Amino acid sequence: MKVASVVVGGTVLAAALVGSNTGSIKESVNPAIKPVGLEAQDSHAAASLLGQFRTSASSWLFLHADLYLHNGVEMRPLTDAEIRNGRKGVGSNPNEAKIHDDSKIVTVIPSEKIDFRGIFGDVERATTSYKDMTGHSHNTPRDSLPLFRLMTFLDPQFVPGWTTGANIMLWEKDREGFRKALTYLNEGLQHNPKSIDILSQIAFCHLKEFGGKRDFAQALPFLKQASAIAHENWTRLSDDEIAATKTNYQRLVVTLRELGKPEEERLAVMEGLDHFPDDVPLGRMLRELNGEVIPEAELSPPLIIKPKTDSSEPEETQKPKIRFI
Amino acid sequence: MNFSAYRALARCVVLESLRRKDLWVVAILGFVILLASSTLGFFGFSGLEIFAKDMAVTVLGMFSTIIAVLTSSRLVPDEIKNRTLYPLLARPISRLDLLVGKLIGAVIVTWISFLLLAALTAVALMIFHVKFELIMVQYLVAKMLGLVVVCSFAMMLSTYMTPSAAATMSFIFAFGSPMIGRGLVMASAENPAIKPVCAAINSLLPQTGLFDLGGRAVYIGWSMVPVWVMGFLLAYGIAYSGAALALSWAKFRRQAV
Image (cartoon, rainbow over all chains, first blue to last red):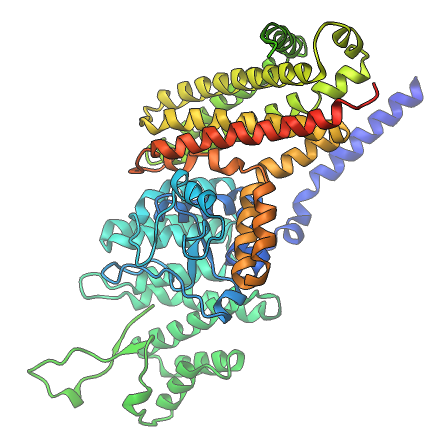
């Protein structure tokens, strides 16, 4: 009896000791540098089919936000094989502001055209929330905002919940949305202090144009911090984080240029090119810094667009207008 | 058609379910639903109405399917294992009557559980002033028809395999058949040569997904399902359940007990 008590007591004590030290393994099981994307949107056939079964609650809610946008119509990305076979996505309404890329997505329930099931297919299309989504419109993303609040409450380390939610808050392009988005992202940053995507998104909020003004000075520290984190953790970054880092470097260079800091701009370009030697916009920026005149044909989107012609000013004297994406 | 035998057998199944306290489990699940919905209230319910309805139909569909499978897959094996089959077969009923009576009982237990859960869920949603549309009635009717298919399928499998294996296979097909069907469509679109094989496999699957009108009931602005579709679901439910029952009988009538 005594032995049993000692064994039970010892086990409980050991469990308590282990439990009290779980904080030290947090970095291993829940690293600060995490994928910024959601793998459920993978285009591999199996992943496309099984994407809805990814078990994380926050990811599940994230996918549900997409259902809100499509009023319950389930969509899936085209598989690599379907793209190779020339199948096109449903596309979206051209008169609507672009929410996401609909050029490579189709309905989960197959359309009548490709469905061999006959009446079973017809009945499924009649009983489920299915409709032909060719050139479809979306519900306002604002309807899905509570879901983002819920998913970040359940999993504060779920970075896409913070960044996409903030993007939706910016949807109406007003000051109130900007304030809310910034508060929301700062909350996300407290939980994910090393998230490149959140830092970059905060900078993006400051770089959004309100009343004809962009706040480059406010954006700069966040862009610098994101670049520094990316630089330090370069070998551990996921593909999505690497893509976010590339955009971040481009924004950083343009911001430094606008703030009139050519030396820092050069350093940022060099660092960016060190990581992305083939990046065309960064290469172009370096050539500009070196005093090279860039042919107009190279001023391609998405970073720089041609300004609208102002009748009071000859076209050749106008500077290219910077557009942030 | 031995209706008095069906009634007596079905009553036994319901009483057995009560004795096993299956319906208590349902009541506890309902309580969990109410508790979960009050947690949603913590976030401020505004804007979460669609999500709450979505959760409600998901939970309803999942729990009612679990109850249907667990109830149906053990009916015949338990009678054999507990040797209670002998006194039953000693009465003037055929083995087919026994299967029909048991199936009716399983369906009644499943329907009671489903309606109980639906009522509790409706209460939870009404607390938060979630509005119901008429399509919700169609959802309930279609779901009840679908549960008949699940019950007959699980009972059929239980005559060919152990109760655990039958339950597992039933869960796979009940929850997975819509996905398998879509996988077959994707596969046949990529390789048209296998279309007849895909069509044959698809026709054998229990099309449980057809009975789930949850998507239309949850989201705003979806119209009611046409009458011919409801008629088709009824006809399909009867035909598929009849076929499953026939397969069960084909095995059970020659089974040494």
